[in-house]
Image (cartoon, rainbow, N blue to C red):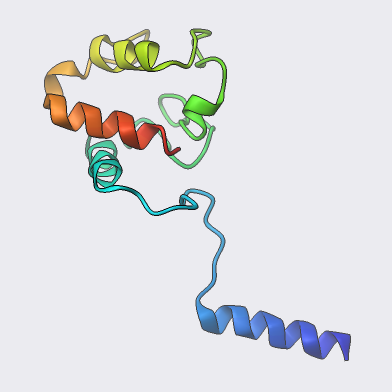
Length: 114
């Protein structure tokens, strides 16, 4: 009987299309965060994962602002993250000239959702 209930529950979850996705935020993104996600996909995702702390070419960014320090050892603050994005650091090239101020603000809003 327990096996039947488990099988029915499993089939129900499949039928509902339920899936686990750790990169999906609990809440819906605001329009600014959604725009920032698009900037991330276009400008950052070739080197950084948004949904993992594992590195690609650069460090994974999941939980970026929930950690006390960046992988460089610097404080994980808006000031430091802005500086790294705008001016580069180590292998990270400067990205300040690749996006508008609005795109940059949108990106920062999105990074806070990771």
